[in-house]
Amino acid sequence: MAQSSSQEQASSQKPAPSQKLSPLNDAHAAAGASFTDFAGWQMPVRYSSDLAEHHAVRTAAGLFDLSHMGEIVVLGPQAADALDHALAGRLSALQHGQAKYSLLLNERGGILDDLVVYRTGADRYLVVANAANRQTVAEELTKRAASFEADVYDESDDIALVAIQGPRALEILQNVEGLGIEAGDDVPEDHEEPDVENALAGLKYYRSLSGTFQDHPVLIARTGYTGEDGFELYIAPDNAPALWDALLETGAGAGIVPAGLAARDTLRLEAGMPLYGHELTAGTFPSQAGLGRVVVLDKPGDFVGRTAIEQGAPQDARVLVGLQGTGKRAARAGYDLHVHASEEDAPVGEITSGALSPTLGHPIALAYVDPQYAEAGTELDVDVRGSRIPFTVTTLPFYSRKKN
Image 1: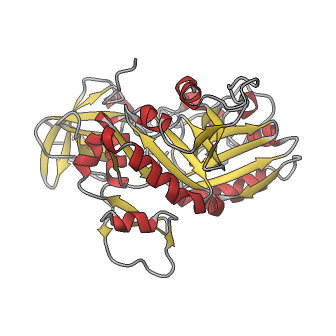
Image 2: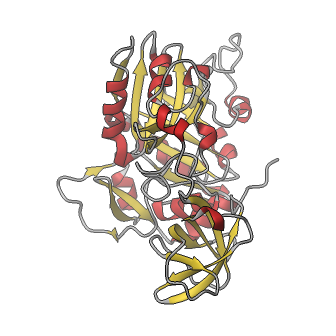
């Protein structure tokens, strides 16, 4: 999933009247954030520097405001069946408290959005969509659920989303004053006051549990988009500023910093995670993007896009690869790729995302290339403003965190 690109134009000017403001906007302004317009929202792109915020997430913790994301609830006796029909995965297999990455496809097999779906009750699912695709996802889910006993509600305006990411995220969250865990959701029922520290430590990746912050409901999920351990917390907008302040105060001694969308973009790129509008589009087959595993063809019933997926992408369809270079010149989205050391002008691929990796110290990029050039070790040249710079196809991700 994705929110923005580091190449967005940042601004500290007052937002236009038509732009939406995060419930944390005042906190961002007070912290000196530079803002960017994204999907009609005014969101912080950076506070201090992209590099400092990136490194903080890799070494300590970063705090992100993701309140511009879309949250759509699917509720009812046939909610699971409706989602199995609407999405590419088998969401009916989710356990209570479990989350799953999935895709919303069109009839041609292209990707309308990539999503995270949480099962938050027996007949209740929370679908988290990219900000720019919120309306499309809500409309498509409503249409596709019409023949099922299921209702679809766009609750995006009633939910704020805060993410704490980094190796010290767990430690910080465990010590936030006023945070509680509700009984159930992997917490022993005989505990009148569930142990926050143990409950959070025991929460598995892509799992969630119900909690409270200052007696207000909060959904705590061990998910993220940075390649690091971390948590995403869904809370009512009115209660988000107090949670934001508590996380920063608690984590001050552990090195936490507020982080903007620019750092989030380089973090996800290092982790090899696709960004909608760059690596994923309505004309992209899941198999082209390396997401064929997300599509479940053997689930019961039909799903939108199934016929096109079974037919498959054209044999010569470009596929997504990772590229790494030397030196300091980054390959940016839209740059063409050519056969290495060849005078042939016809491009054999195109960069979709690229940056000088803050963690690795050399240029990295994601690109779609003709399939014959997709093997790891293949050398290709990137046309960087008229100069051809050599890059090498490499396996993804570029960066993987060390796990305990």
